[in-house]
Length: 162
Image (cartoon, rainbow, N blue to C red; front, side):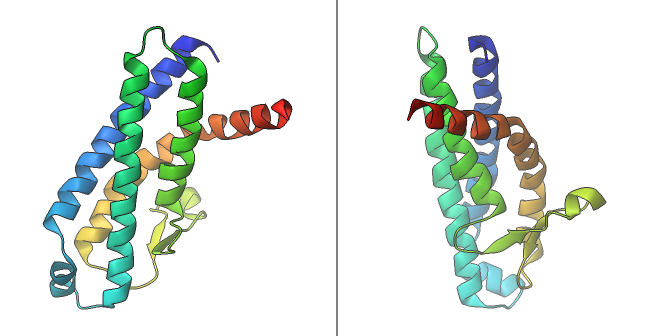
């Protein structure tokens, strides 16, 4: 891919990450374990796992947004590091959203065909948590489609360099 295409992609991703960070930060600043439990009494350990994963996702997204900004401000623009960070964002942010390592929720891949949201919680959760995930999912889905190229391209380059 040309430098301008990669740079444009990096700008789109940085904008997406900033928007995601704002949503996650607003939610986490207003939400505690006790507020979730007050809204809907549930499994405290499960709520802890969900909040923990959201905090981790926020940290990954903030770090990635900062890295994107640094790369975009560089002169001249460096394509190879930009492609590497796009690959990293795909794994740390996008895949973590759809399939968190602590299994706080899961993705129902069949939902893409039915037009429903694909994030499914294992247990009942408060409506505000469901609303947050629904609000984020569309942008994450679009970004996943946009960044899948870097997943396969970067792996191919790594295999060829061995």
